[in-house]
Length: 246
Image 1 (cartoon, rainbow, N blue to C red):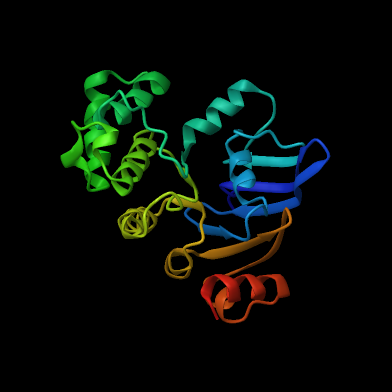
Image 2 (cartoon, rainbow, N blue to C red):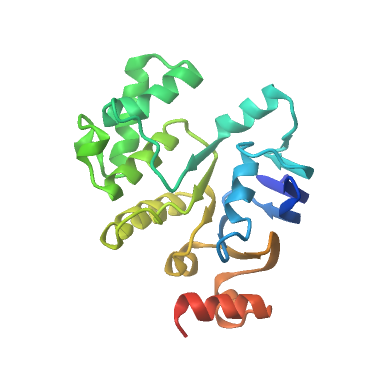
């Protein structure tokens, strides 16, 4: 069998006396789509931020496509070239156009000539169905449009893995659908994905596996049908009752 795209074993993350991640182990295969859910403060965002070294784990092993994340700067750069990330807040540069927001990281990080980078940017904006806004500035767009630009920007780096940290949580309800539709299209293209979200409809329809976290631990993980219809852990059942309103 080939090595997993993402491998975590015994991962611990401490902030002083507080332990945000407690002995977390998780393996994600190439092309697999994993949704992580759980109550606030359960360690979900910390976990995916550790995967591209935005947070430095305190103990355990993290490998991305076989490269272990250590203090080796070259290894960190190698991983970040292959891992795109989309945050709750769009993190777009307000003084740059949509096209420039997407092309600039490609120019700076990969050294791609500007004309080629802009061609790639236009392709990814079209993929996210936002190419008609290429010349506008972020504050001229709706929240849903800005998040689709943020996804296009990440895709311009041609990552093999995409991480999403609550990508719809900062959006008005009427804007959530357009971002989820863009993510569904991306998932259907075979991208390896980890998505932290409370959008359970997305989890049920798109995920290969749903992971439930609580108190810094992975409590349960299962295919969507089993996760939603017959969860085994009491913590999972309580969470689903609260979030689904049953």
